[in-house]
Amino acid sequence: MFDLLGVPPQVLFGQLLLGLINGSFYALLSLGLAVIFGMLNVINFAHGALYMIGAFVAWLLLTKLGLGYWWALGLSPLIVGLLGVVLEKTMLSRLYKLDHLYGLLLTFGLALIMEGAFRHFYGVSGQPYPIPDALKGGQNLGFMFLPNYRGWVVVASLVVCFGTWFAIERTRLGAYLRAATENPVLVQAFGINVPVMITATYGFGVALAGLAGVLAAPIYQVSPLMGSNLIIVVFAVVVIGGMGSILGAIVTGLGLGLLEGLTKVFYPEASNIVVFVVMAIVLLIKPAGLFGRER
Amino acid sequence: MATQSKTTSIKTAGVKTADTQTTTIALRRPGQDTARNTIILGIGLLIALAAPFVLYPVFVMKVLCFALFACAFNLLIGFAGLLSFGHAAFFGGAAYITAHSAKVWGLGPEISILLGMGFSALLGLAFGSLAIRRQGIYFAMITLALSQMVFFMALQLKFTGGEDGIQAVPRGHLFGVIDLSNSLSMYYFVLAVFLIGFAVVWRAVHSPFGQVLKAIRENEPRAVSLGYRTERYKLLAFVLSASLAGLAGGTKALVFQLASLTDVTWQMSGEVVLMTLLGGMGTLLGPVVGAAIVVTLESYLAATSMPVPVVIGAIFVVCVLVFRRGIVGELQARFGRR
Image (cartoon, rainbow over all chains, first blue to last red; front, side):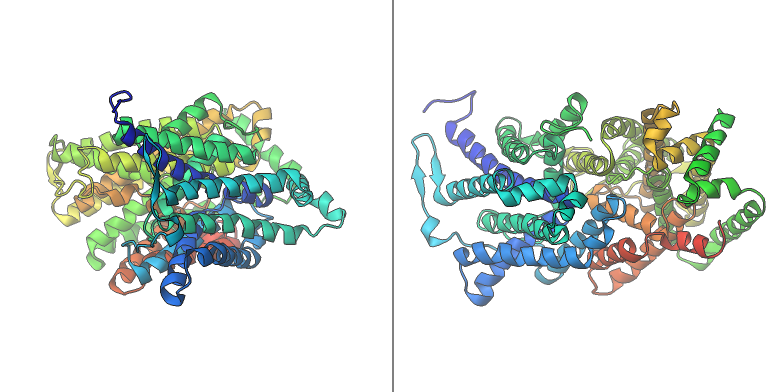
């Protein structure tokens, strides 16, 4: 066996894969945040909590109704998305005329409620969620062993990310969306129902978080706290990437996941903070973020 | 300097006519309002002096520490319009430094607290100079992320004791003379610390510096066009706020003889936001009232089976949706100006 910089390749590639998976979740979540921010000017603090709810819905579907992973993959984002629509219609929509910070504060409160409630009923310990039968086992790639499920997570989230990018940048609906981000009043004057579009955008962004939750359920355990620490890293990712571009959110998310994986190999003590350190450096060099526009 | 800033606020009020309340208030305030303020403060002081004979002293000390913390936070959000979501880093960070100085180095309480405060000031300088590079919502996210970094460091570094924190911190003798293990002398020490901190906030808000901060809050491009280097004002406000948060955190570490991870979590940052929001952002007494209510509520809830975060979150949501002025802000709006 050959060594890379004194590290066995199994360890290196194993951690890189884990980093790539984390990066996929960062990408999915920061993508949702970016889409929501573009349309609503709200930073959705509840994103982490909704990711957690996505995972919990999958777990509840399995344990209470006996519906498996593939059902959850469709139903859970739908349920989380509907929850998002309700939240937007009843609460967030009242705040658009005010300072954007109120949106952050409101969603922070919502995140506390959701996490607190799940903690109250299910405790802090994680619930295991089995890997679906079709994705059990793994491939031996020669230099490392790739569990099928982990490969699936990376591929699935990449497909969803690029699908979203395509829908926003290359379709007619996406064009309306981008136009409404630039100038909602004008777009409304052209006869497009902007309020409905805003609601749908929030629902969609939140559904992405729910989807990420389902994908994460078999890898991490399903626990009420799984979202709260993740969301802060995702905020840092968003600051690093800047929220100006969809592609930027995806690339930054994946890149930082990989970087985190590398740090785990070479200097594990710093792996928790490496993303924040990168954020500080980016702020010093390019305050608007790597892909951001100064506004 | 003083005259310059006065003309600023007059100009702003004249141009904007009635659309911003705050600037017009600043012009009307002197006179009978000062008398009313003195009466309110006098009554508050009497209550604070008598409190340890009626209530459990440690509880009131906790309220005072959090009240000072919230006042420090309010200096940023209420007067400079900067929402920091990472103030726990200064509060909890100073608590660790103070606890370490008192326990391991055996320093006196006043030196330990000053060291903790100095640490928070430096940390505030570092975080502040990064965070003010972005505005609004990004400012909040950056401060949150940076404070999370402090959390992970507190979790991993040796001297912080990880999950256990630093326990059994000696309160020591104030100036080498007054024994602070007596809860009554500790109480009056904490009250003095709080009053000093509150006076600093009051002085800062009612100074030309405070006027410039308000100008930045209302309209930053305009403040820039008037020739103010707004980054410097914002940074100074940030450092001042961080230092006072550190003062509160260091004092709290001595009160509870404990510095723990709880104080550096993002939930703690959120809690101070709630105290300020509930009491009234941009009012001087609001954070004190908010802190008293939240601390009282939490100690009641701890005895029941109600999940605390859910209640806290619900208050957050209600405040943001229908009660944005907060308690003191609402009272001011109902019963005259202030």
